[in-house]
Length: 105
Image (tube, rainbow, N blue to C red; front, side, top):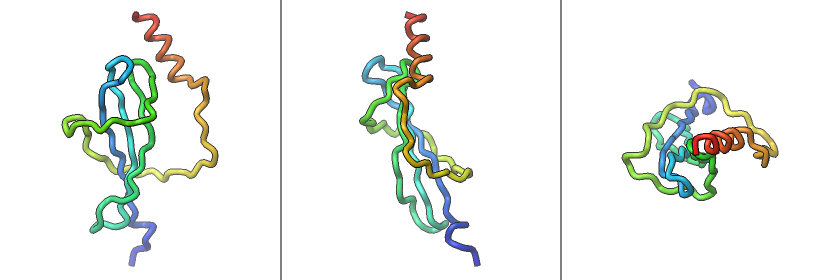
């Protein structure tokens, strides 16, 4: 017999919608869990969103149309529990995207 932990499968869900600041593509992600092969996904939780054009990180993720959802993929890597994960105000990605936006403008 196979143990319960060996049958758990995680799925990465990605979707896109327009940025409220620049209309660029915001990519939002979530993770879902299937506890065995016959049950539906449960524990679907958001993992964040970011605009690829300007780096804006919306707090509220818009519901994308079905045309802007990508097929879920199995996430085969173990996800480590990190205590106290903090996003720095000096986020490198946001700073780099802001600089790129200033150069292109």
